[in-house]
Image 1 (cartoon, rainbow, N blue to C red):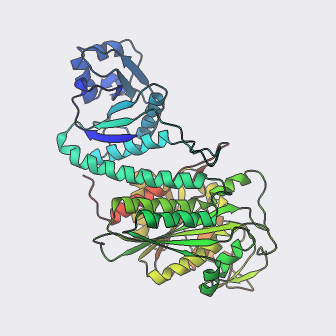
Image 2 (image 1 turned 60 degrees about the horizontal axis):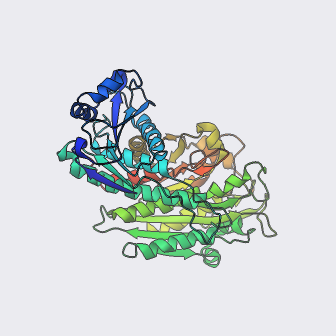
Image 3 (image 1 turned 30 degrees about the horizontal axis):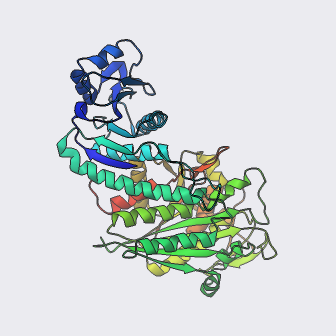
Length: 502
């Protein structure tokens, strides 16, 4: 499916459908007014019948409109004109796309540029990402030798830009949106794979493919178990030691042209391709969803794709911390004491608190790059889901400016995050009488104590931790990855790149 930016003469466009907005109390958008005049009041004559009022969720399909070349016009209710926000605009677009998918429509023009949301950059980007999300389908594995991708009926979508002066920024927005969507879709495709396909070695292969595709900007190094032992990554090794599929850490180094500020930004993604809990085994109910315990690594993978597609003028390090937590004769045990790469010792009280053990060595490994900013992304704790539900990701950081930058990107993208504290009272919960730290707290504030644990390994740079346990996938009967927080962190990088959106 292709997207195009165009300043259309709407009544003359030969297309399958033109989508226009109607606001509360039957107030037509400028594009709808134009089409109504061209059709000699045909649209208003039908609206007077009372089939649509302009409320959010309402739609009305019109056929054989006089003096209009398009085969159809779809009126879409957008509610009160000055109260539409990003969240309900996304829902409007998703609902509209579902309607179009059910019909024999191959070519569509969306005339939504008059919607009052920020500016044309954000209108276009919201439209593209929302439409793409609505059309996304999981690739089913019926036969590994057959590509079972359902053909989408819609071939092309034109986004009509009513003001010619807005065309340049609209085209920039489209370029950004398609790159971000490529990152999101790649992240979701990776996350949705079954764990017998997507294991730590498979993750490393995907990273190496990036180096081949973006050979001018990306270099990949894969750290295997032998190298981990040489580096002293004993915590990381212990988690994966009980599994047949051994751990692999993929280090993706991206360098753009004309790099700004001589700044290095690093992302670390928890990549537990399956988490049984180890000896502290999880309940059987919904354990199949633990294939999604690698969504943090998948997010980093998607973010690097976006950066490479847009050739961002930044230096970025991405780490996919691939591992499996399984039961076996070599499994680490409650009561074990591990010496991390940093030299700090950790008493294991629960082998299901394994992600922080993989991440702590990955965070220490990053010190060799002298990063200015490090952000780890992890489906880390059920406690975060209890605290924030499935709408907000938890944010923890040792730097207020970094927190402000992430909150700003969150507000721009509507990818919600919520700051939680890192206080000495919580750090005390990790005390051990036999080691420097224990790997869990005293049963309360679990998301916070997990972040406090990680903070012990982040003293040499500005650091943020995103706990995405509630937001990385839809916790439903038919579970599916969401691709969060790829757009949020892509926007963070765009802001670091000093892009101007209007």
